[in-house]
Amino acid sequence: MTQAVEKISDIERKVKGKIIIAPLENEIKQRFIQVSKNAKIQGFRPGKAPMSIIEKQYGPDIRSEVYSKAIENQFGQIVQENKLNIVGMPQINHDPLPEIKDDFEFTATFEVVPDVKDIDFKKIEILQPDVKLTKKDVDATIDVMSKQRATFKKVDRASELGDRVGLKLESFIDGKSAESTGSQTLNFILGDKNRLEVFDKELVGLKASDMKDFEIHYPKDHEPAQLADKKVKYTVVINEVNEMELPKIDADFAKSLGVDSGDVDEMKKQIEESLAEEVEKRVRLKEKDQVFVELVKHAKFELPKSIIDNESYRLMQQMIENMERQGAKAKDLKLEPSMFNERAEQTARLRIILAHLVEKEKLHATEEQVKSKIEEFSKSYDEPEKAVQWFYEKQERLNEPAALATEDNVVNFVLKACKIKKEKVSFDELMGNNQ
Image 1 (cartoon, helix red, strand yellow):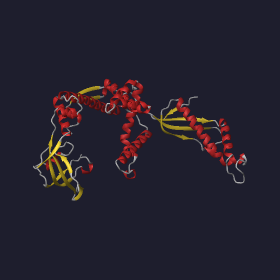
Image 2 (image 1 turned 30 degrees about the vertical axis):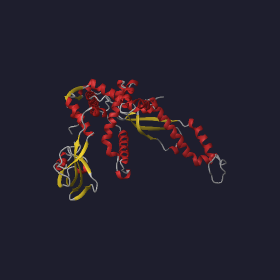
Image 3 (image 1 turned 180 degrees about the horizontal axis):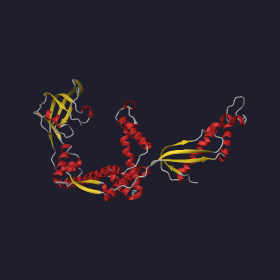
């Protein structure tokens, strides 16, 4: 008979159960017989002690084990019959099991996965990047590829932007040495966007054997954080200056990019097609990120503490594993699950919302969608056919492409229901090249 479920709150439930002892007596008796065969009772050989002594010595433990199992089984039946989606461990209360002589009741209090109320998708607005590829974007990409294949020639002149300089340096923070290259030489390409512009400007105009002292005040949001808002004094010695020599954009260059014919126009066409694919991916990713943020913002429900705790612990373990791969020792990290609570709550909320929408709107990925996602993954491998075969060799390897395809279905569903505002952005802005 289905037990009544008491609703304590949106996420807490309580049920009562009753254990009838009579059906359990035979199991208890068999446990006594089994224990008696090997029990070591002073004054008796193994298997010869009277059952009354066996029951007196082992009875409380055996009955507690049998009653605990009965409670577990009945609670499982209650959960199944009521189709309860519980999270965490239930808190079960009853009289002390070793003291129980007659039928007894127990109560179980537990948390359940919250119900997600309907979301008003019309209140969600998504900014959709509107990007038009230009000849300038293609030429800039070719220029980057050209620089990646550049050679360098040593020159006897002052350094300029675009040159590669070899140098030794020592840095000081608050008068104390912070970093030193020692006898090693560092090579910098002046004007590289991956470094602070003000640093390279200090090196422009120096020749081999020149030494220079200068100071840089790093911005408050600088990465790495150790240098953020710090004044750092540098002493540099230039070893050599090398001029960049770019390859010609000709048939050999085209062939180096995989265009067997060496046709430069064909090379540019392929680059443009590749950039168009990348633009589509980036636009899609930005839409997805926005959709997920908006879903979490607009879906209101109470989140069980056990879910946050479990997710915080998972994130902490993930961080520890990542740091250990970089050479850190777990005992030195001093991490606590609570440090990840905010991120854990956002992640858990999104997971519950996605599961809700997938079930309610029937958004599970189809076999064809999973296959398409696998083929997309496999394009990045040298032998795509073997990569596809690898995915299908084991069922669990399909989990990730299936999950991503399902997420795509959710995003498509939300985009059809919400407001979309197009936002004109350049290719560089979309790719983050202006940062």
